[in-house]
Image (cartoon, rainbow, N blue to C red; front, side):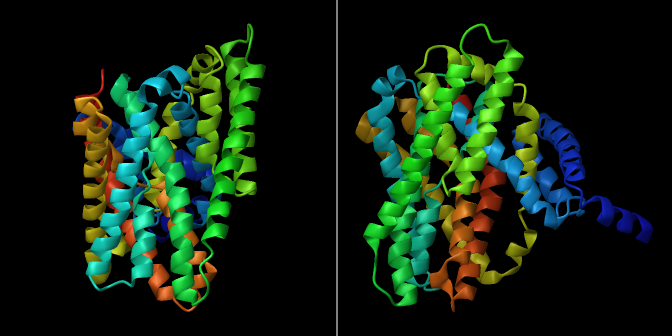
Length: 406
């Protein structure tokens, strides 16, 4: 037995082994999930939990950095798919309602989570504000995977993609402003809202500009009689470059990928060829992406009483804010009744952006001397991610089935 454990410890350090075992585990648990009527991505996440440090430790904890590159590329591909739905013709029909719905659900989630956490008297207002800003984020990966698996389409999907895309940009801006208030409160310094807004604006504009250039290049290089494998090679290569440049210069691969997809969507039929060529990559990429997410979820967060209380309050307040924010926004915009009734249910998954913001909080200089509070905030976010990544996809699938054309 000890020999097997030693062998596992040696081989589990290799990143290729990690990817391989996650793909195999995702295959079996994804198939099992589908058979019991839940999305296969939930099975992928469970595979990651079982094979990661919280389970059998077949994937070593030190692989997080190496496997992170796969996550970044997956997000860029997912973002390209979302952005490819942003044709001008669709935006003319749905643009106004998407903006209204996004604003309602984002600010209602922020307000309810902040108020609910502050009223517990377990957190200072600065921490409640930061968590409220994190609560506004929605994970697009689960949404795209479910929509593609069901081959769903129609106005509901147009609204869903649009709201998810705008939500991430809005979340970055909102968090930057809130971080200025919270940072000044914790550090006892002056509030620099202007600096925070400019910093967020730089990230957003830089991401959009980078994505626009990459989308234009993909369109240029894939014009004409290019074969599908040639389209796949150049598209994937440019997405790799987009991801590397974005992460190096502090831009968002997610926003950049969406911008690239939007440029493609308005450049003729080329977007269809690019998305079609990338479809062959989607199954293994989604499987390993969600499995990696599962390896990062730790069961130890459920062992602390105050984290359980605060995490539960966070999850419930965020769910109410997301659902009724969409409902109120759709009602105000006079959107399709199906959008009003079901779209909020598809906004529950939470992962990459939320984790990224939580890790930023943990490393922020204004938390020097407040390490325990930073750790509490990160634990609350991770608990929310754990619950919403497992429960969110089945609820989202129900919403898409009810609201979209299949």
